[in-house]
Length: 576
Image (cartoon, rainbow, N blue to C red; front, side):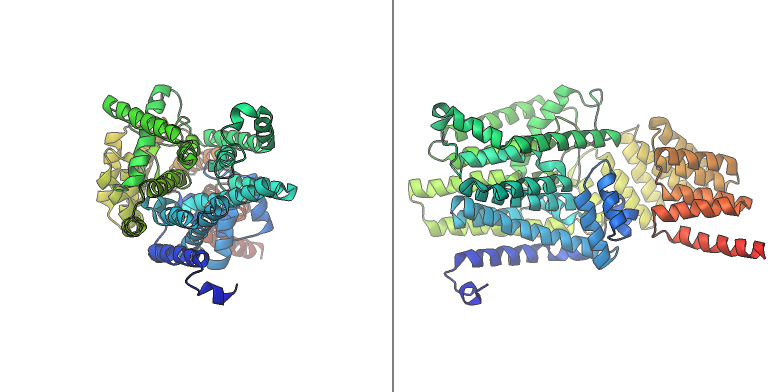
């Protein structure tokens, strides 16, 4: 890089990048020192044997061959493994990488609009809004959402390369687009709609499909469709993988649980809720509980809002095609997570807006740009207003980030801004339990059960509390209540085994440990339980084998490693 050019104030391109990097870094820096949270971070990172072991050939192969938390995300897992190799199992390293990718994504968004539209300042404003919008905090600060920032990195690179390909028609660039798209889907299958975004870019700003050609040049349209056929096939494959993996994990809601009419109403309301939060991002929460009873007035207002905006962008399409493209970008990229296929218990999620919000930013920025030209608005006043908006969002983001300091602050805030949030009560209870506030934790679990009586995880957690108190019979009763609701809970079976082991009933303990393994064959803790029972019976060979299996699954298991050392010492003494 020519530094004499960089420090030239007239070189707006480099100074734009510099401002994006510095402002985003200042806003997000505090998050580096935050803790893990007890919401997916355990399964993905600090209790995940694969990630805890660091990078290895075996680990890379396993990342590609296994599902984790009902997701096939090999590149995300490999990125976690690399963090572990460099930083150890410390939240600092994982937070640093998330923030780094978000900064990189923000710069790439700027670069994408610069090369595709030629409008430097419009691209800069879109990139800054992307960088500091409060709705994006969840994707950046939540370690488990490495999926978002990594898949978006590859996705934006694919968009940039697509612009290069579309203007130069180079086969190598076409293959690069395909490879980057594949990497994005292997990080998180959120961007399965990217081929449709390519179509939008053909319309604007690349102008490969001007409106007059829709009726006049049908052959050109067919060629553009055929060109994207491999991308659509890839999207279909990853959509099927995502649905099947989510179903295998039991996270896809059934028609009985979530009727199609309810899903449709929730989708319509969610679209307008995302728009509102994009404009005024307050009362943000890590989880918004699904509300099957939506007021008819909200549905009618939501339909009207969507209808009016759609009509407006179609009306202004000839004069400002960016509006229709931006609005379509927003609608299309949200489609996989809008709730027509219900995954989990959330009605919506801030993290789902990471890429879709770019569409709304296009509408806002190019809409204002059109108004400046039409009404000859004072550019300095518009610039000051834009800077004020960016500053306001930056301050709001700074405040939103502090909520993610730890599990207690995160879920306490969620309870303060949402209603009937049984998941927040559960996780807040877990956070209180970690702080030694046992009775308060039980109170939170019971509040979760008042809202959702068949919430098996709350029963499981209450049982775990009684187990810590040494009240095995009470613990067993709650574990059985959890299993009566859902049988395929390896942790419940493990806990039952532990309870009977402590009660001195080894046969039942073995049965429950083996049942846990039938649901989760790679359950290191269950093998440790079996090893402890066998060691107690004096069956040292069987105990040794069980602990070896546990250590093979989780090389970082201190319990398995210490037990193996003790058993081997006993076996040596017995052989003398």
